[in-house]
Length: 564
Ligand SMILES: C[S@@+](CC[C@H](N)C(=O)[O-])C[C@H]1O[C@@H](n2cnc3c(N)ncnc32)[C@H](O)[C@@H]1O
Image (cartoon, rainbow, N blue to C red; front, side):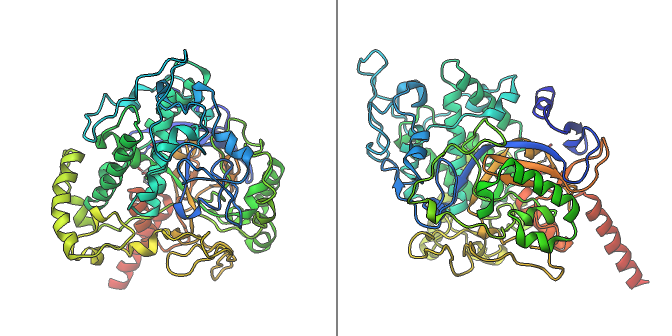
């Protein structure tokens, strides 16, 4: 807890803990509306597959046109400029090219490497290295690799290093053949980044190694809700993680984590990450912009319309929402908050296509999951090993699959049992499309229930408040370490503002010293029942905020009044 408190040293928040409520943040001193509470760098981020051709892998800027530079190694990531490409592939520096030199690329850039191949390495003395051991797919896990890297200095996690693309490239090369849904693949990308950080953390002591080690340790302290996944949802994740393990094996990853080790990583990512939304205005936000907006926010919290249409990121300012904007986000840049992203020069090809400032769309946390009925959650064997559970179920599902076509959005191995659709929200409507917005839809618009409504004006409700977009409009996920300690409220007193290198939490109203700081994880303008459903489904908890408690009382007194 003492380590964790250090994460908030340079902020206006103090971490507290209660037996009932877990960890939460309170105001260190009195805050006025518009005051910055804290700034959080990105810990992990990944884009949905359909957006990779539009959003630079290195600087996360979005382009209207398809990006020209693609990594020829994995064919899975695109860059907006050679400078960006170089920034993620630090050439011959052996400290950047993987564990124990096993994945050193021998002078090949990742654009020359064969996709997904395990390239023989030479050691630093120029002698041929032992070929990287190729673990069997069913290799037994080592000791928990994640916990091994926990260090005392969690504050260093705020400067988590960028994982070199060379390290991840051979694994990402397999992602093209993944059968899981787009959001799952996005989460797998974040898991892979974490494994990459873990590899950096295992290197010889260095500043990068220490920061990576702190980041891995810090991730471990986040709440993990894997145990609360419904049975079907859990099977889907196990199947996706099996795919990831196979990709790691084929890429000669030196240590293959078991499913039991990987599932908690997913459990942390899905319940702590935010969806990212295409906000053209966020790309070039500066600290000045931010402070201006924060000041405006103080004046405009409840008179949103004018500022909504004139300022970038205005939806976040006015709508007390969990609003992280845009594909900004850095590759874990330590310079925060005013530093430019690592891409200092956007390519000429890309620049004219950069999205114009437009009223942004606010954010909903991802919900690319089937809504598992409560009764299906309860029949999960509590202590079952992931592997046993998966293999048993796969046999069962193989016969079901023979009878029932897959939706195409799920891994065929976990295509739902007969009748599953009746228990769940339409998965198709909630998942980002697997089609590619860069292929044939150059205005970025897509049709259909899974459409990405990039160029659309914000949807305003009856009171002219911008509404959260539907979850399928997101372009990826992002995880901020410090933001993961804010509890949710349906009447929050802070909001999350996304900028190119991270996020800033800003007070929306005067907050007294010691008062809890809260953000909204969802569109809090939804009716109470819908809010409860979204929080349970996506974040695995029943909201105990004052508004919900009041709402419940109000509901019951209304019912009593009706009865009486
Ligand atoms: C992102 S974490 C927030 C920090 C968390 N309290 C902790 O100790 O790490 C989200 C988790 O906090 C708890 N939580 C947050 N807001 C809550 C609320 N309004 N009511 C009940 N539980 C809440 C839930 O367990 C939820 O899954």
